[in-house]
Structure formats: structure tokens, C-alpha cells
Length: 78
View 1 (cartoon, rainbow, N blue to C red):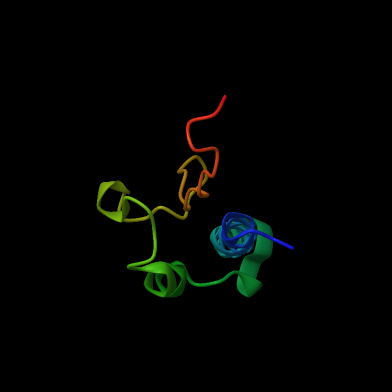
View 2: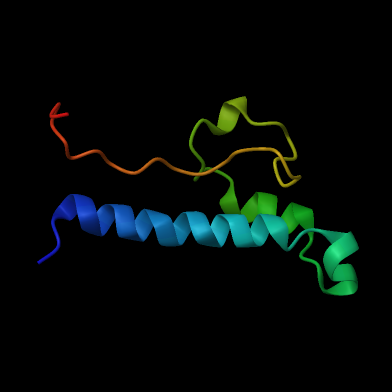
């Protein structure tokens, strides 16, 4: 049985994967006319990102680290 930490972290991994996928799919060089519109991706994730206020206005380009941190259930052990 999964703990609440494990369940949360698994969900977070899935959400972060979707975020990275959306970010990568805005690349017009790679995907041409099939690329997602940057503004749509920015609007979709607005209000959901960790430390969003400290991110550049366009965080979709490569080299910008965005996402959410997993919970830590070690309780100070280790």
C-alpha cells in the first residue's frame, strides 16, 4: 500500500512530466506547425508553478528549470 508521500510524489512526477512535455512541444524548430503556442502553455500553467514569480516571463525555452518538488518523508533521518 502506498503512503500518502509516495502517492503525492508519483502524482507530482506525472504533473512535472506533463509540464516538461508541454514546454518541449513549444519548439517551432523541432515541431514546426504542430508546435504548441507558447502563450497557451504559459496560460495553462499560470498559477501552478513553484516560485512562479521568480521565473522569466517566457520559461518555455530550454535551460529554465520549472516544476514542483516532491515531498520528503524522511523526517530528518539520514
